Length: 55
Image (cartoon, rainbow, N blue to C red; front, side, top):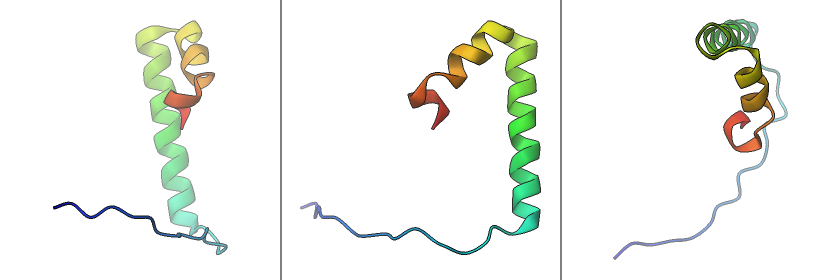
């Protein structure tokens, strides 16, 4: 039997470590560059404007 429920997970109000900020920035840049090279500007804009893809 599967138990289902809910849990409250509050937001963390601390500071993001610098190494993580840099790492995520580099990864985002690589993703954008890859989409541009493979699909072009219109597909990048289409994906960025899609809330399901962007999240």
